[in-house]
Length: 532
Image 1: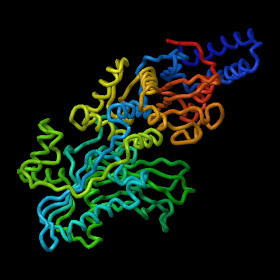
Image 2 (image 1 turned 135 degrees about the vertical axis):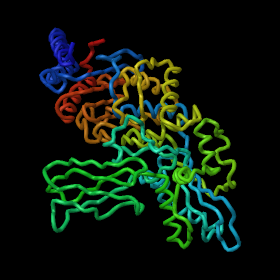
Image 3 (image 1 turned 180 degrees about the vertical axis):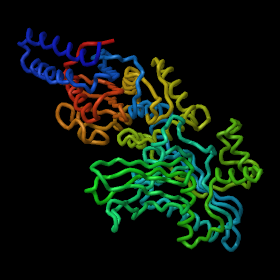
Image 4 (image 1 turned 120 degrees about the horizontal axis):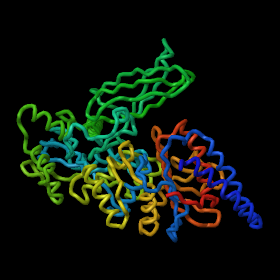
């Protein structure tokens, strides 16, 4: 039975029931009103060819309130972030913090010259330098804190380099199933053990004076390395925003193509940083120079050093150690003591905000970068390998051990950006119900957007009974829309629900209008029939 026919049958059936029990005054009238309203879905072509799954249960009793195709695996988009963040809270704990360490090797002579290198050792923190956590990184500015620490050590000049240190040396760090069109954009920023500034930079465009159909870049923040080349093919024509940034990880060319409405005078474009570890080293070196601390060599990374030495046919000891890490010979407890190199000394350790605060940004703002760092950290914690594949396996194993049927879960990232991901609405609701009884529930629940008020739901479902009531993670990409979370019915029953729609017709706006009717009926207890 198609989704539209199910809703039509549902409306007709319950209209008859409510007519025969008209004595139940106010409550029954509200339900009947919802049914009449939801029948508006039946004639819409938006769901004609769609795959639809809905599962809703009473969180206290686990009684199924409504279900449509709850066992089919569908693309969840960003609703998958609930899977990732719930797993992280359970495995890592809500108070877990990432670390980033400032180190040096060699010796500081009597003249204040460091005869060695300065290192920024990344350990997977996605928040370093994020303006979403100003109290951690901008009061005072974290780079300023580093420089003051370096000065306090008596270092006045460095005859080595500032090096961004990561274990990841591959040429391509994005999940294999991410599409090229995403990678140059802010939402497609890839994982790096040493991330900085949310792995993004912003460009301000304004119309060209001679030809106002063209746009010029007038400001870039933060400062980008000179070697980054931006090819600007953006135009000011038509009446729609339709542009994309093309670029690959570790490649310094970025191409911006497309158009903005001709009546718009300015545009801010957010792009992904191609090599975050290098940008961290570049930024620190620049600030050192501004503060009178000369650095003899240019900024670099352990990955770039590997490329250089591979080109020369010489793997230096430091790189051999990293290769051993990738081959599984790496011992976590010895991470800071790399054999065959001059021992390092810790100068300063940055601690990230607690995981519960990171989860808020991940879910409420649907931050892909944070979700990818979290799934990698799960892999490191459980399997000793900081990568997506091990993180996903550890997460699925956790939920399987918790008693959830994980059959049909096929995942390729932690954020939901991959179109190859699939999961069922029942599995997502099972996780919601599990978290309801977890010691980490408050942190998890607090991270969800609130209808009509916060995050990705701020502009959606702005009327009663959904506004302020429905708390859910949103998910959306081309021909995919999903909502997963909690709401309370008119009788006070708390419901955990998940709704996923794939391959719908029409526009996202049209589908959202139909979903609002459906969720309103759910809250008004007008959807009691089950469809297996």
